[in-house]
Structures are given as C-alpha cells and as structure tokens.
Length: 405
Image (cartoon, rainbow, N blue to C red; front, side, top):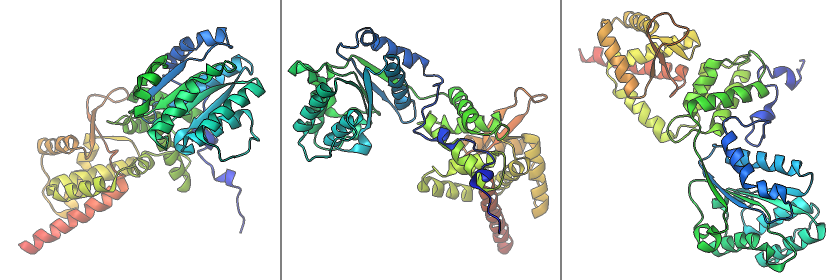
C-alpha cells in the first residue's frame, strides 16, 4: 500500500501555524487606535531610552486582541530601538508563581541562568543584578495577571518590586504592560501600586464586521485560494459575534476547526456544515440537553419545518436558503408522511416562531437576490445531526398518534 506524504492531504490549509492562537500576524486589523495609544504612551521612552518606563494596564475579554496588540507593539518598539530593550513576555497563568515569573524574565536576558530555589526577594535582587551586569533593559509584558498563583502579598511584592526597581540607583524601572481579563487582582487596586499606572486601556469586543475582516485576512495567510468563500467567513463571524463573545481567537479557532473537518472528509472546500459542526463543539452539554427537550416539545408541524430547513441546507450546501425552498421541502415531507400541509401564512407564522426561539435564523435577502425574500439559516446545530434527530421524533410522534387512534 502506498502512503502519501502528509502535505498531499492538506487540500485547504497551507500554513497551519497562522491559525494558531500564538501566531503574531504582520498586521492587526481594527486595532490601529489601540496601537496608536501605546505609541503615544511610550513616545517619551523612544526619545530617551535611558529614562524610566511607563506602566500600561490593558483590560478586556478573551480574544479581543490584548496579547496580540501588546506583543506586536513591543516587538516593533524594541526593533526600532535596535537592541536597547529585550522583550520579556510572560503568561502568568502558565508560569504560575511570582518566583517562576521572575525566573522567566531573567531567562530572556540570560537563557542559561540556573534554576535555583530562591525566595521572591532574592529573585527580585537577582533580576536587578542581571540587568546591571548585562547592561540591558527589559520591556516586560505580564499577561493573565489575574491568574497569578500565590498569596495576595506575594503578588503585591512582585509588582511593587518591578515598579520600584530604581530605588537602588543603578537600574532604571523597566517599561511594563500588564494584561488582565475582566477583573483586577485586589492588590493591583491598592494606591501604592495603582498610582504607578500611566495609562489604563479597555479593549472592547470585536463587531461582526470587524471579525469578518480579521477572518478574511487570516484566511488569506493560512488557507489555499478557493478553499473558502465570503459566505462561510460571514457565517463564522456571525457565530463569534454573539453575546459574550466578539472574540477573534474564537473566530479563528472555528475557522481552523472547520478547515480540519473539511480536510478529514477529503474535501477541498470549507462548507457551511463544517462550521456548524465546529460551532457545536463549544456548546455546553446542559445547553444541548435543554435544546433536545425543546425540540421534543415542539408541535408536529414545527418539527416538520425544522426537518425541512435541515434537509434544504444539506442539499444546497449553503449558509442560507430561501423560504420558498424550505416550503417546498416542507410540503414534500408532509406528503411523505401522509400529513395535510398548512398554507403559506400558517407556515410563515411557524417559521417566524422557530426563529424567535433560536432554532433557526431569519434574514431579509439583500444584494445578489432578485426581489425580497426571507433567507433561513442554522448555526446552532449541525444540519445533518438535527435532521436525524428531528426525523426520529416526527416518526415516533406519528406512530404514537396511530396507536392512540
């Protein structure tokens, strides 16, 4: 049996690294304003690299660009100053304790530094010694600061020690960017630390339109031409922009999962169904059980309409289908089961009800469609699995009614 190289199996993804959360792209769409704010905040340090470094605090939900913007800015800033500063990025959640955070900062300057069992005060002193000996300056990014383990006193001692590094007179305080999610560690709010913070920034979630631009840019970098289209990217942007999201990380993760699912199926294009499947992975089990129960409780004709939507989406392989196509499928299913169909107005009323309860999505047709029509989609579930489940429920309902006659 002949085995093909793995590269021959990659019909969609051309550069997987560019879909990873750790990837830093050449450009950051829709974060220009935040980058400009950082440039202004650090402009005095650029003019006088020997001066004290500002402290910036960035707050925001997961996936809104806090880490990417910080790393992007620091990378460009340190490159422009040609080696004056050594970037020191530390994820506090991964490193855990204040001691390990300091050790990681030291290792960016002195990679061969031995791992010793030092106290927090000794690690702070060692960092100062390393900076003096190496004649280097660090530009520190402390990410996920709210996840730092240890006592509140240790957290305060770590941050205070970095902020007040100049007290000995031989080391100038480093520039620092602190990144937190939606809450601050209590010690950071103490006046003794809060007063050091030069600028406080909040990153807002991305809009659907912004997520679409980000997805298109990342797809151009990572995927093969012709393996995706704007409709699929809009579908992902819609999913990722729902309440409590607005996350580019989630959107890019969905794109990555959908691309992998398509490749595993031997497909050379990302179809809407792969996006639905990828989106279903992140839904909590209790939410799925609740949804299954809600489907079970639907009246028979609403179940049939759900089945019609599922089948129409599967056949078309589109993100959205016309109301007329769904109605045709509905009448065909009614005929299949020997059930008299409802008229157009009654069907529309039930379609609208399904949309209001979140089973399906309804939109008015726009550019590219002749005349006004309702478009129907489904992002909450994979169409194939929903089709199988609803068909079973319809048949059990019909059998139950026959037995009660």
